[in-house]
Amino acid sequence: MPHAFRMFKAMTDLGFAQGEALAVGGLMEISRHPDTRFDGEACLDRLCEGGFAEEAAEAVASALRHCFLSEKATAQYERTKLKTALVRGGIAAAKADAFLTTLEGSVVTRRTAEVRRPVPHAPSPGRVVMCDFTYLVKPEMQKERRAIVVSSRSAGAAGRCTVVPVSKSPPRENNTHHFRFEPGTYPFFHQTDPVWAVCDHIYTVSLVRLWQVNVNRRPALPSISPAELAGIRALLGTVLGLDH
Image 1 (cartoon, rainbow, N blue to C red):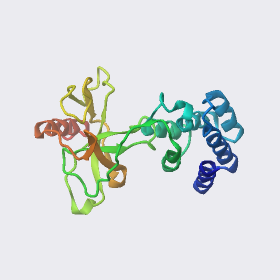
Image 2 (cartoon, rainbow, N blue to C red; image 1 turned 90 degrees about the vertical axis):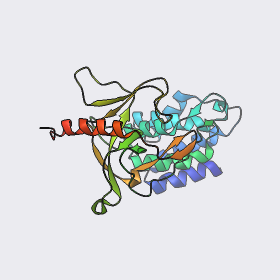
Image 3 (cartoon, rainbow, N blue to C red; image 1 turned 180 degrees about the horizontal axis):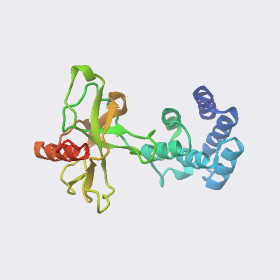
Image 4 (cartoon, rainbow, N blue to C red; image 1 turned 120 degrees about the vertical axis):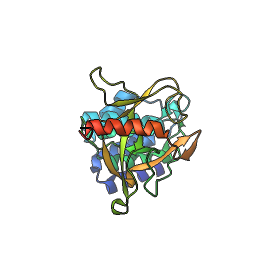
């Protein structure tokens, strides 16, 4: 049981209960049989019996689905969505990330070839990065998503920078603190729907939470235009009351 044992050991090392680790390991071993089809309800029952809370069990079952050979041609592995579901199920972000990293050695479904290249130095203002907001609490920003760097580099602020997140969700009618990017404006934003820089969500984050955006499958630190950056900063001034 190489896959099951590896996952069991990794999960116990991460602090999962032994019953939880045994349940996941057992399901991973079942998944290796080519004639076994993924049964979501059966997986959920087994995970709950192992000690997972229901919401966490649903998230873990969704992740384990990608280890079943029967799902190879139909399921698309989306790590970001799986991690978000695990965190919402009560699993700490770092723990969820490590769980998925271990699981990926057994994933057989079609996978996204996303390369995560870190950001070693504070990017200049206007650069677009990926940022992990997963562990924050609503109504704070959620999920891994694109963000725009708005702070200048500073010797006294090494290892961090200030960003505003980017969202595809349109603002409410009375919210004027969103800067709109039209569809197809940049290859690193959505091509058919507008996206918004959410300027009433301002975060100073560690560079550890950042990685480069994949543009045409290559990691990069692309930029928006100086005029767009100025527009975003003007909205930030309004949000912070600095325009009075």
